[in-house]
Length: 302
Image 1 (cartoon, rainbow, N blue to C red):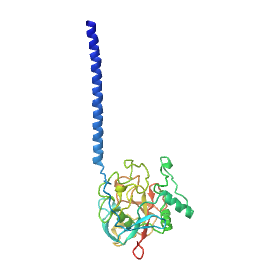
Image 2: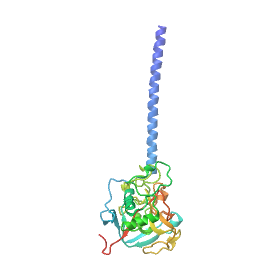
Image 3: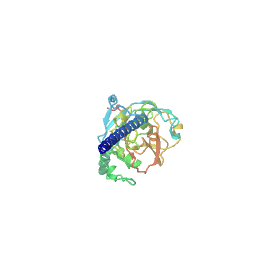
Image 4: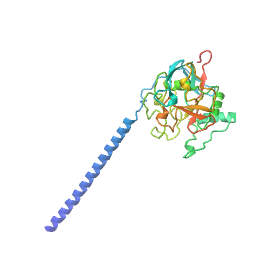
């Protein structure tokens, strides 16, 4: 009987230990799941998102096709607020600017589109000088064109029957007539632009036009992030203090040119629509690409 008691006790001990172990595993799993839910909650609170369920209607804005077959949107004549009083020093002061109407590409130029231009004009293809990963991760025909100089961008737009936009034109097209910090509103949203990191779904470049939630008030894509874009103006840190009210064209021609729109390597702060960058006109960088503008036709466009 004594042996049976020991046996039953051993069995009970083993069974009890097994139940305790299962209970601990279930508890640890529950605790881990709770921590995961908490982390996701914190992340969702820290980063606002933009709903894409109810799409905006941009049909009120006229469009036309450029000579190279790319769609452009007409940006209407009128005033807007340029610059920012709570940004970097060269963004101040906020000031009113009145622009005549113009057209701007709906999307950034792709590598395939730039390649067609380069072949037809016997121009060299962009070169990637420095990149920490496999270059094939950047070199995709449907990705945004990059590693182009200001001179290359000017040549491409001229070939397409267009021109580079003025800095003021670029900013109005990106923010509309209000003072929004980003094309979609005042708060950054992770699903609206391709900036630094991979939370937005892209570690490096993305095809132009995939961020539906990030479109500007006129329906333009990628005015924040993906590639930054050359504009026609030369750079002067204090230009806004003396900028004319109507159709400013920037200071006299200089070696430093203006780059706008942030890129896939920029922070939220540097992706703001009023943020200004400066670069030598000959500089090529894997973060800088092209978007072209055009004047309205004498009859008012179509």
